[in-house]
Image (cartoon, rainbow, N blue to C red; front, side, top):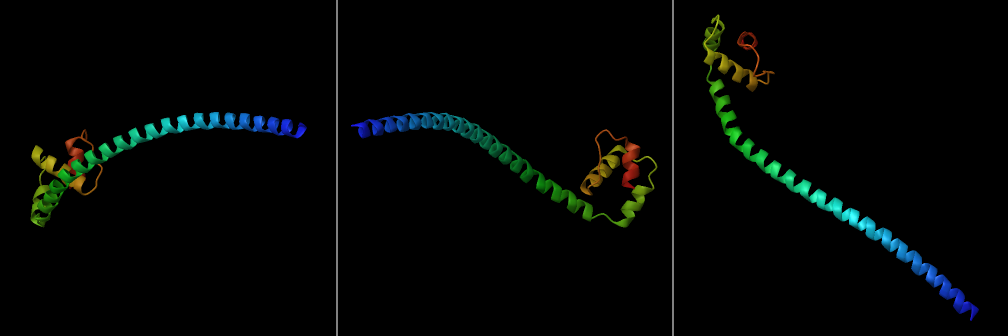
Amino acid sequence: MVEVGKRKAETNILIEKVGEESSVAETEKEAADEEEEKTNVAAKEAGELKDSAEKALSSAIPALEKAKNAIDCMKKGHITEMKSLGTPPTMVIVTAKCILILLGEKVNSNDPEDKIWKKAV
């Protein structure tokens, strides 16, 4: 009888321990579920942002290619003529700014025209 009582006490201790561990596991599962939800929302937002960026890129690439092709038709005489202009017309400055951007030069929208022109020629 003592053996049965001892086993019963051990079993009760084991049941209590399993109950405590189950409670901890349930708390951790709830935290993991919350993180999963946050992650799913972030993933959805990232996917939407990616789709938007890809759409913008796909519409910008043809314009970039068209601009590159337009630059390819320039001849040395065109460039010499451009350099000879002391104060070029505004649209020439705009074109020079575009060319600098295509060439990878750092150009700010608030740069003065003379600075852009000096960079371009």
